Length: 202
Ligand SMILES: C[S@@+](CC[C@H](N)C(=O)[O-])C[C@H]1O[C@@H](n2cnc3c(N)ncnc32)[C@H](O)[C@@H]1O
Image 1 (cartoon, rainbow, N blue to C red):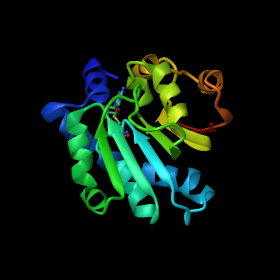
Image 2: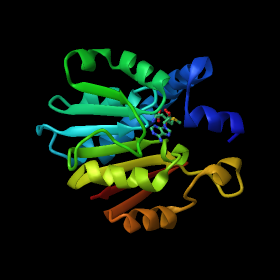
Image 3: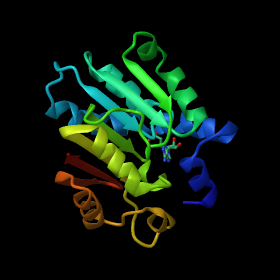
Image 4: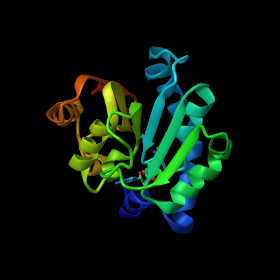
């Protein structure tokens, strides 16, 4: 990954950042839809009222997918880039106006929600960019309900590539170690092509 792409990915702002947000939404739609369907929707009772949070929500694609797949849930998003909060809000205009979607500006290391609030938290292509990983994971665990689901989806590049140098955790053992050190249970890791998907419970 070039330094320029790392900078844009970590905090997409300005013209380049907004453009990156739109592109991310376009290129991720099909893949994210399949991940959400297979690893979340197929495994839960969708007739329940659920609270879902997408951290590092970028252009808001994950929020809009949950909005289209679930009827009774409330979906929240947070991002530390004001430009991404604005883009996400535009993309999710319908959900915001009917009160189903709530998107705020903030850092994942200080989440503005009460303890044990969410049934599901997702982090798509964002954890590599966090400036304060440990406090971010502590915060996610704090706001997740007991037995709530935490899903991470990340690039899983080949060893020796630039992307491999950039990613925080190099393999499933490293993900497993950090999550179990933070007290997460039932850590289930799947590698699908060049993406790693981690499902775990509080
Ligand atoms: C590569 S983009 C991915 C966006 C979106 N999740 C997606 O997959 O399309 C990474 C996002 O994480 C956000 N981000 C990075 N560090 C963050 C932090 N500490 N707190 C909140 N958002 C953060 C960035 O602003 C950016 O929108």
